[in-house]
Length: 390
Image 1 (cartoon, helix red, strand yellow):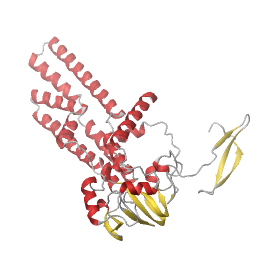
Image 2 (tube, helix red, strand yellow):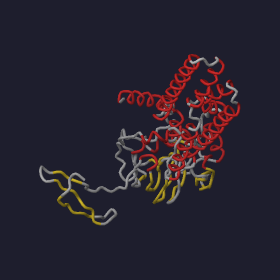
Image 3 (cartoon, one colour):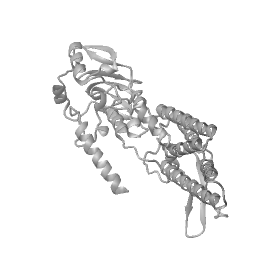
Image 4 (tube, one colour):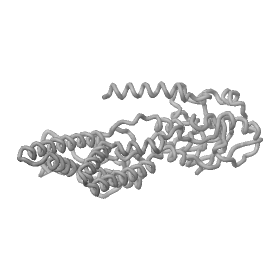
């Protein structure tokens, strides 16, 4: 498994390097970066900004591709359990059980429509990322600070950042300094200081002390920065691209449902064939035996299982959404329940940023801790555990 993950990560890194290389190197000296961007302390002229906007495109995160409605609907209609229901409906009509047949078709249609609606609402990762971008930005145009639409920013623009502002594009700090909340990119809960200083040789972009990134928030300070990347070239844009490029794989629930569907089909078919043979053996007419076998086949198909699974997953999606978690497809909800180990060093972002001694073992006897009070400042004491089995 680790080798497979390593190969995927390596291939993804090569694709990212080839497709999404930055047009400008923000780690080089500021004077050289300004020359390459053909800009200065007074920013760009309105005319030059308009020309660059036509060349580089708007500064926004957009969905590069979207599956068609027909394709998504077809996916719901050929779900393993849905195929089982299609077969049951067909046999119901053959056995002259029209009411049952139409009822099964209604179950298929209602379930497909509901599941499609839920996934359409959930699969909005790119739109959610786009909401991190501000609508307006303060840019220096024609030598004067001017409020412009954030989507109109271009490489070479000089932007003004103040406390409380969202950074509208990836930029290199040229004057002043700010503290920036980078938690959406790095997972670190402590704001990072970004000042007009020289870069670190060979450091990752996120660790550079002079770079600010699109979608992050300034929590303190004031600075001017030179934009070097906009739109899909920003760190936020690359995250959006990765979310769209991820290959869809069957979830544990989907694999289990497929096995159950085959098991139900096998058992129902075997029982139908058995009762057909038994009916003929006891002297029943072939037509009556066949109708009885078909009825038995249809009765063994759980028509309510598919909508029950869909509704249960939909409830899970809503519950996670209320807690700020984004789920792209319904079947992925159950995958979290199959997770046994989460390895992370992001204490304070994913956890409560609090560590407490729960128990300790000595050769003899065994001790455990009892917390006194609650909160980060809580203290405790170590006591002898008289009931180590509990």
